Amino acid sequence: MLAGELVAFGTETVYGLGADATNGRAAADVFEAKGRPHFNPLICHYPDPESAFRDVEAGELARRLAMRFWPGPLTLVLPRRVTCGVALLAGAGLDTLAVRVPAHPAALALLRAVGRPVAAPSANRSGQVSPTSAEHVLDGLAGRIAAVLDSGPCPVGIESTVLDLSAGQPFVLRPGGVPQEALEAEIGRVHRGITPSAAETTRTLRSPGLLVSHYAPRLPVRLEADSVAADEACLAFGPPLPGSSLLFQLSAREDLAEAASRLFEGLRWLDREGLARGLRGIAVSPVPSIGLGLAVNDRLQRAAAPR
Ligand code: TXA
Ligand code: MG
Image (cartoon, rainbow, N blue to C red; front, side, top):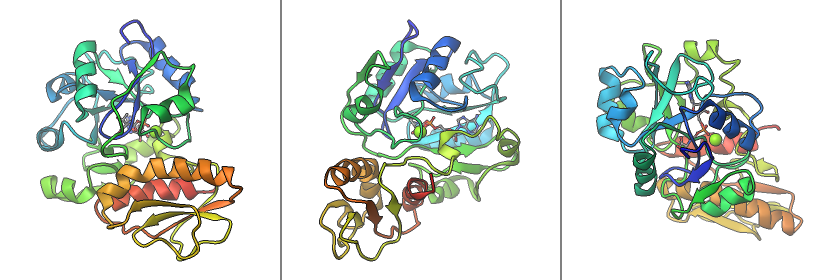
């Protein structure tokens, strides 16, 4: 990585496509390898809050959240310091930077060894389902990256919550591994959606995580299904839907954390098996929009959005 090469690595959320964030050339290679249509800001990863807060200005809220949720699946968008050495391209030229300290021993060991901020979007081709195993990474990026550090399946399985603290009031830009309720228990009311400052930069900020169609398998996805057609596969949460011949169970006991951890694996598996069997779509059981269910439904809605 210090030589400018791209190295994918496991985190608690999904596998990241890592590059030395201070190396503009390496950041450019990340966009190229992913096939991102525009230059969108990347999240910078650090081994501890102190090193993260050397690159961004952290107020009291940020410090409280870092204390409570780092290391963990929370990304904070904060104003860049003038001394910040992250390549402008990695941050898409914005005056804010998204920073996170991941909770995975392999990721933390890598970050400590590199000793520089590591820019890492999810290690998938743009628009496709995020990877939760080293095998998923190679499915999409073999031949485009130098290495993948295989640390097994990702325990959380869904990307970090992106919280914008640069706009005066806290805004969740992307629901993820830390539920909104948990954030609110720590800092009070948190808004949902695009911040005014984010909207302003939306031309550059059309980042994959905010695009409507994203996380898309090749088969069309139908949400809130109460039954399955003969030519559909079933992504179940709780009791399998009547009529399903090809089934992937997110969580038989309706546990949202289990469902989040299995979501991308399930979409990939049903897509592959369903296509092999000539099926024409994926029907998905309803999932409640509480806790991690909000992030699960966010990803499902994008997977089902018109392409
Ligand atoms: O869990 C995760 O966050 C994974 C792992 C590898 O850490 N990373 C990830 O990165 O999901 P990516 O590039 O797929 O998604 C990055 C998202 C963007 O969609 C965007 O919403 C947000 O982070 N983002 C990054 N920089 C931002 C900024 N300066 N302002 C607003 N949003 C930003
Ligand atoms: Mg992504």
